[in-house]
Length: 168
Ligand code: RP5
Image (cartoon, rainbow, N blue to C red):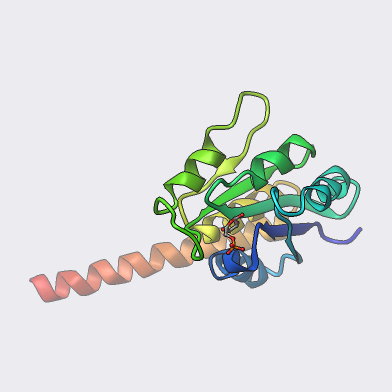
């Protein structure tokens, strides 16, 4: 069986610089990524077509980023059984409310249709959460995640040692 893919979808190519954070960390962990531009408002048929068939493909987790009236993650979640992680984007090409508009659109889902929403612009955490979900059934990925966390730990300890040397 081939390794599950994480689908990174976004409402516009203007979201790509933000969503790159998810793509980069997934590639760092050697997780296969498929990238799509699917707009809940501009290409609703394509978005629903994707969502309705995603669970029948090799996709294991969907990461969906959008800005403004960000309905993409919620609408996709309504038409799939796969876990959906939402990334609120600060839309670059329109007047926005600093991403709070997108955050509230994603996080205030009605009971029954969950979207696991990360912080505004924090696509990296969406990627890491997707990896943790896939790691439930993949011990190799679990080991990589443990190493990643250990490296972060060691970095902070080194910084603490360094700052202590300057302080004392
Ligand atoms: C949303 O509208 C997209 O996710 C994007 O963040 C925002 C603006 O899109 P563009 O006008 O830049 O294509 O649907």
